[in-house]
Image (cartoon, rainbow, N blue to C red; front, side, top):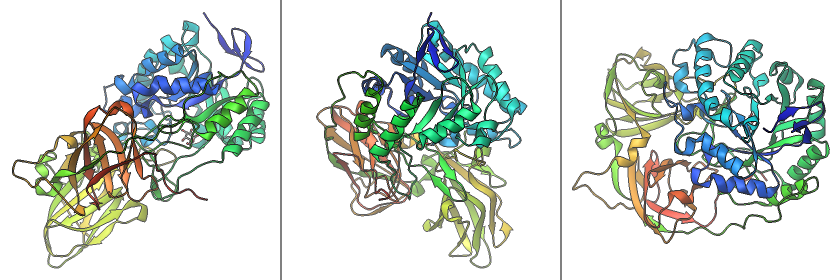
Length: 586
Ligand code: GLA
């Protein structure tokens, strides 16, 4: 059986010095029918390894469940890597950051706020152990010493940026070994002395994450990892985007020369990302360092392979850099072709406020619950209560996470936005029915706010008096495409249209192909094509098009369903030949 070890100066594969040239590729951000294509393109760029995180909350949407089907078939992903003749690195967290909802931690775990987050706390650790056992059941047979591709497994993720609980790191290491992981274990930290110190544990190989000033960063890492191979476990060759900000790009020459410096220093590398993919569905995370900033749907990352799996100038530049040190395959992937541009008119609208009971089931609560008190935890919910005051008042919430649209007697009053720290709104009349549509826009994935609850936090008051007795209607986004108009309702629509509304269309394509849906004339919402949730769109930008992976598209007629929460300026479906991810900084 092959053998992989950490030597005095290098990684050793069967006793011989081996440099890891890895690219991050998250199976959960790529349609499973495209995994093999993306892996092959990594090989053609000259990489020898694929790295992936494992998102706990995607595999375990509720307690007691562990889904390994379809796009979550980690075992199949590892087999495809092996079939391509490549190696693998697995980073199961349990916390992964990754601009992923809650950094991968399941929201249900923190319903009880006394459950610890990323620390040695018995209930947190019991859940973590169960999760790791399930992941490692998949990974163990794919390890290199069992003739599989897996070379390394990482413990936690940039833990030194969060905590310094060594007992926690030791417990994770123990669970990993007891589950049968025999390959070397690593940690990764930002190359800052106190983080490298806090995030590491003796016996685990320390690596670093950075995207520039390679020589200096490697020197910092060396001070904390005196022997063995130097490895940049996350070479940031691009960056992610927030709604309302610009689209990030990094200059090709700069990234290529930083990669060159890394390779010249003899270091191993994992490109973060080789291919970013997409935050399909409602999987995006958010940042909050004082202002909440949700992540966009695209995770293109300005990576060498773009969101649609096409090579970019960075791909070719990196391949050239790698070729200075190692042999690279002769062929390269073909350049992108323009995508088909069908059009269609949206029709058959069904408005939420016309008959909310068709969107879910009302449940009554004596006080206003946060989302995390409900089962399952909703991402979207309608709240209802009766108002009977003496004069029009000010409705105040403790905190809005993350967006609340307020309706009074069926008329929209306004929207409270977490980014603006909004939490109060004037109601137009003293008596009537109050409806509030609340949306979770993605859980924070980095820092102290990981695991925090969603919904309306701290209840609601009217002129300082608590509003009790609420009807709550959780809306299951997965069921939205099935909401169809009743017979006799108005089918065709024109001009601007106010949501919340579900509306649909059919469009034709001659053959399956990647598509780029132009959402510029729509407001804010979620889109499905043939039942596959593409993700969120928002006129706020910078992202303007949504990527539709080819395997989702059918020859002939395709169905598109749009959940518009704001306003559709033009109820038309339009596709464009190339992605539009928005304005850049320069
Ligand atoms: C850190 C994390 C990654 C990711 C990057 C930024 O390195 O470890 O998961 O969040 O930052 O993209």
